[in-house]
Image (cartoon, rainbow, N blue to C red; front, side, top):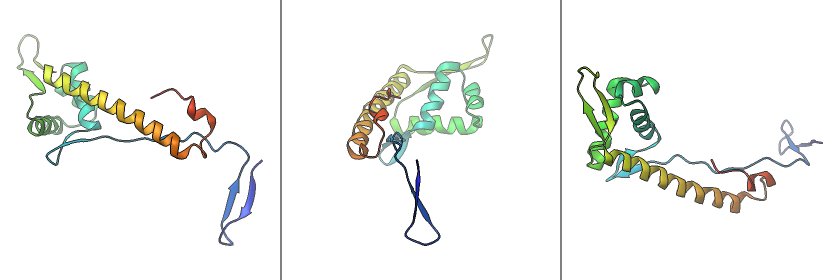
Length: 145
């Protein structure tokens, strides 16, 4: 049962409860900078994944609710900052053209995901060490995300 106590000010109250406080989880957003320039981050990774899935920059941009022009800008920024060609473009024709990831683009995406998994593992472990006293026991057995 929750108990209400007067807070440090007369008009504020604090609540204490006997129930577990909930599951505490460390979260992060990860960017990769090359020479001080944002080369890869969550948005650019989603763009590359959408291109890989749909084989089309136009479809990827629509899926992400992004203008085609902004999608091209992100691709140029990735390629300029990494020095790698991450997409190959096919002009229209009978097949209608398209865009796909190059082998370097696929490797870059895979490296980002592996790096993120490793960092997330560390964050989960560090959060457990530092905030365990406030987190419910369920957090220790929670499956990785």
